[in-house]
Image (cartoon, rainbow, N blue to C red; front, side, top):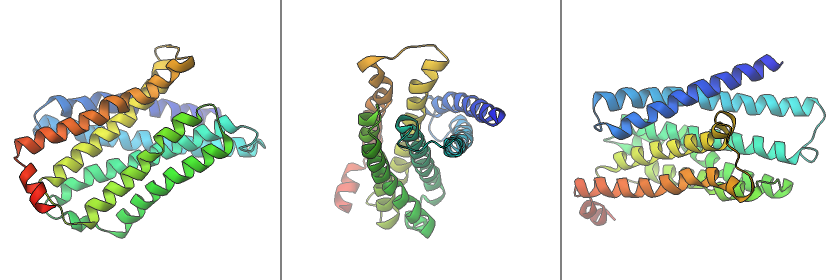
Length: 247
């Protein structure tokens, strides 16, 4: 069954590289322009394939371990990593789905208040709790990293619930939601590349405390970038007064 693993790996790497390349074009080009839209669409479609292949890989390797007779207590590091990979893929998918979906309902965000959207947001929040519990149970070598990244799912779900459940206080709320969601997806993709791609493709060795850097660097750069960029557009659209009056 090695061919299944090889197909999933090839698909994941190929579309992951394409997604990373396409991600930067909307960042560097005029917002809303043809290049922005075209490459943004390419990024999203490649991301669907990457996340699907990641999810299938998690299921495949989990079944492989179970069939071989290995329990989480026998292989705590491997099982914890698979759970984390599944968590990251699911939360990124929920986030990306929302960030892309807000474009369809710019004028009426509450139209997104569907059962499916509420369910996915709550599942993202539950995924955070599950990751923390599973990690504390097995206590793998990367336990601190997994626990540190667990709140991402909760924050994602809570943000989505707030957006689809409450009237927007800003006429440009959809833009900030789209911007934050797409950049958050970019953080996830760059984290995956820094942790796995840099080691395997570039033969870089991150040992000791340096090994934490690829896990946290994309978020350390990306999260402030989201805040700065959002503030830039609020200032551009004179949206501070609107938001404050709406609050």
